[in-house]
Structure formats: structure tokens, C-alpha cells
Amino acid sequence: MQHAQSRLEFIPQRFNPVVLRLAQWLLPILLRFRLRPWLPAGISRIQVKNAEILAELYQQFQAGKIRFLMAFRHPEVDDPLCMLYLLSRAVPRVARQQGIPLQYPIHSHFIYERGMLLWAGDWLGWFFSNLGGTPIRRGKRLDKLGIQNARNLFANAKMPIAVAPEGATNGHSGIVSPLEPGVAQFGFWCVEDLHKANRSEEVLIVPIALQYSYVKPPWAKLDWLLSKLEADCGLPVQTIGTSEIANPEEIHYPRLLRLAEHLLTEMEGFYQRFYYQHLAAIDHDVETRGNANEMLMARLHRLQDTALKVAEQYFKLQPQGNFIDRCRRLEEAGWSYIYREDVSDINALPPFQRGLADWVAAEAELRMRHMRLVETFVAVTGTYVKEKPTPERFAETALLIFDMIARIRNNTKLPGRPRLGWRQALITVGEPISVTERWAKSQSDRHAARVGVTELTKELHQALEQLIKA
Image (cartoon, rainbow, N blue to C red; front, side):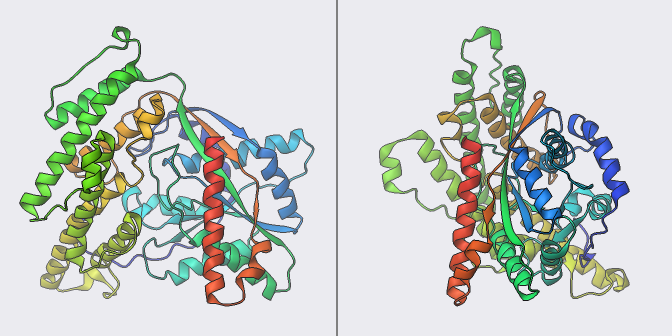
């Protein structure tokens, strides 16, 4: 974003059954074929477990007995398509099989992050609005309008609501990122709103796990991708045919480590030389143990901290919270320089002032790139691949490295990833968590309310972890 823009306007939801029917009709195409550069697609099969739980919940919802929110895992950008499949295909099918009468549409409102439209295009805002989506500004201190609209939908809409509590994709089917506390807070608010209106519906949060795997192990494509990454980094290319080795994972793991170590060394030198950053010493115990993976993670965390500090120093922000918290604060700070809330019409500025505004916007965009690099690796651990060297975990890690290199090389926020093969999705519906049962304990004072939100968030996180490990 090289030019200043007017403030981001709220996009109200305008659910349109015709648009929903069109999306449901196009779903097989959207799942299989890449219609946008940033959409991986290539999903040939979806398996759903426990869809009967949602069928029964929809029956109770339509009977006016409950309100519920679906909290789904968000490892990839394909997740909304899989959720559309769950509600438009799997739930109606199991309802028919079990004789559960449901009224059309079996759909949900959903919360999406307003910033998605900045890289995906304005057309997505129209599409999401007509599908019943409502936006919230991630990172904004208090997006009153977005929060109020989502809160009203949860308590009063004719459909339930869905949200990804992780707040962003992490690229890992096997790791649940820290959850945003807002999902639990919405649950308590819904109970409160129903209580004030003398309504007796029970409020539930339903955990839903999404995981992806390859139909056939893509070792040959992984070899190609690693060779491409090695070439892009200036490393000797180690092309290895799968027919030459019995266990390709044993060959590819050292290649991943070598790529990671090379990129860390390059980026450490980059920040030291051009941003005059002093790299903190690695913990002595980590160095003494000499564990390569542990040392790699220590260097990665140090580099992430350094990259965030470069952006924070520009925006005059103090480092607070974990890496995700710091990324969100930086995102909002950057947006305030680009999407000017203090200017009613950016195009009405005199040319000189408009030029200054564009200058500031371009500089803010550059600084935010440091934060985007950190976002790419927030869920990376030193043992993810080693503890379970599956093709999926190799592919997820290699694709994250691809994202980093492509962002720097091609100056793009969300690169078009290479397809490594046809994938299949597994959707697992968990047992609903009653918010109503926990609400009374949270009403004594503000401390109790905060504890209630924290405990419910923790319980939801544990439920999602159990679902992906089952």
C-alpha cells in the first residue's frame, strides 16, 4: 500500500439466500481449483466426524431452545470453504439419515477480519456481506461497531454464528495457536443479553477442528520445492529422487534444517547491518546443551523479537504481550498511518499534503513487513517435524519458508503457494461447551468476569487440541 487511503468503513451484513445458493453450487469448483493466486484449493475429499452433533444443535436452535457459536480451527485459508461444506452438505445429509427435521438454510453468520479485504479485494467484502459475514477490525483497541453487530447477531439472528478463535491462520494442522479471548467474551455477553431480555435459551460454544492431509505423499513435489528454496537462497541444490531412497523424510529433514539455519544467519546479519540492531545473547543453558533444534528455536525467537522491535521503534510502541499480541498492535498502528481516520476525504487534500500522506503510508507499509515476517512463523516449533515426520508436516514447514522468501523476493503479502498434490480435509465436531453454566460464577465482580473469560478460553483451547490429537 504505497498511498494513503480514507478510513476503513464498516461493511454491514446483508444475508442473501440467492448468493448462498450460488456459493453452495460453486463449492465443488472452489474446493478443487485455484480461482485466486492466494487460495491453495486442491481439496478432493472432505470427511466429517460427529456431524450429528451439529444437526441436533440446529434443531434445538430453530426450536428456540439454544443459541450457539461455532469456534473452528484456522490452519489454512481453505477453512471457510470447508465450513461451508460442513453446513451445506454434511449436516443436512446426516439430518436426513437420522430423521432430524431442519429448516433451510443450514448456514451461519460469521465474523471475519476486516483487513482480509485489503489483500483479497473489495469483491470479497460484497461476497462475505451477502453470505451473512460481519467484520471486526483486528488489533483495534475497541471496534465498537464491529463488536456490537457481532454481539447482536449472536443473541438475536435467525442463524448461529461462527468464528475462528485463533484470529489468523498458522499453517499447522497439528498445532492450535493461542486463542483470542473475544470468543469466550461473546459467549458471556450473549448470556447477559438473553438474561436482560428474560429469555431462557442456553448459550453454547461448539469446538470444530479442521485438519489437512495429502491423498498421496508428495515426496517428489517436496523435493522440487526444497530444491527451489535452496536455489533462491543461493545454497547448493540437493535434488533427490524418491526412487533412490527408502525413507525420504530422513533426507529432507537435514535440508529443512540447513535452509532454516541459512535464513536465520542472513536475517540476523540483515538486522544488524542495516537496522543497527544488537542481538541478545542466547541463553547459556541452551548453548551448553548443544541441541540443534533448541538452538534453532532460540535464534528464531530472538530474530522475531528483533524484527518486531524495528517496527515498534518506528511506531513508538513498547513491546507488550506475546508475539501475536505485538503483531496485532503493530498492524493497527500501521493502518492508522495508511487508513487515515483523521481525514474525512483523503482525495480532497491539497497535492502537497497528499504527497506527505502517501509518504507516511509507504513508510508504514515497509515497517509492517517486519511484522508480516514474524506472523509467518508464530506457530513454528523445533520439534514439529521431527516428532512426527509426515509429508504433511514437511510440506507445512517448507511452505512457510516459501512464504517468507516470496514475501521478500516478490514484495507480496500473501504469495501464491505451489500445489504439492491433492489434499483431503478432516472436520471433527466436538461436544458443545455450555457458557450459561459458567456465567453465574463470573458475575460477582470484574475480577471474576476476567477469570471466567480466561478459563473458558483455556477450556476451548484444550477441546480443540484434543480434537486434532484424537
